[in-house]
Image (cartoon, rainbow, N blue to C red):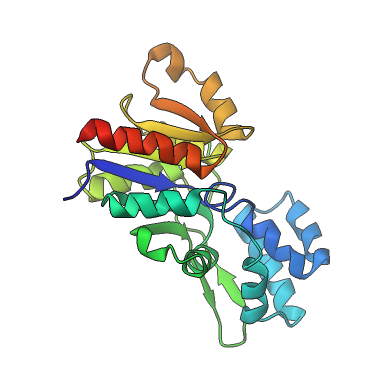
Length: 236
């Protein structure tokens, strides 16, 4: 039986306990200075990082070995598994890239739990260069030029006839905030303790307008799992 819930996850500092883009520079520390470039958007900076790693002869296998050392956030695999057993539709919206996300989900044996991935497309060339492109263009004034999570969530809800479903959004960062603006007061935002999203939600004018979704802080995936189990029970 299909669930009346829709789970949407960020990836960096949410499903995994770190930033995939900065983690990969462990391969070559000198590549980190490229990430200080204020003239390029982050996705274009990562394209430069990947070109530098390619010039230094790092291969796909090197990338995989590096990514394998990035841990999943405590309790997140268990949360994904529970969501899967409950037939809850699950998607990832992330400003990382499609290769990093798919590889880590497969390595963590949880790829089957996720139905859709929305991220910057990344592909390997025959010469072992990882290329990356912007996910899309948009007109949102508060999101980075390559991705508006609010637009993506809105389209996802529309295209999957999920307007009546209760949305569970799990994230941590500033770029997750726009997605929360697309949510109903009956939806849930799980915002990581000590990170930017929770601070923004506490400052939001939606609080005064009483249009903000239900905000639940979290530290581990087990915190979210406990809440989701209660939500599932309430809907039965």
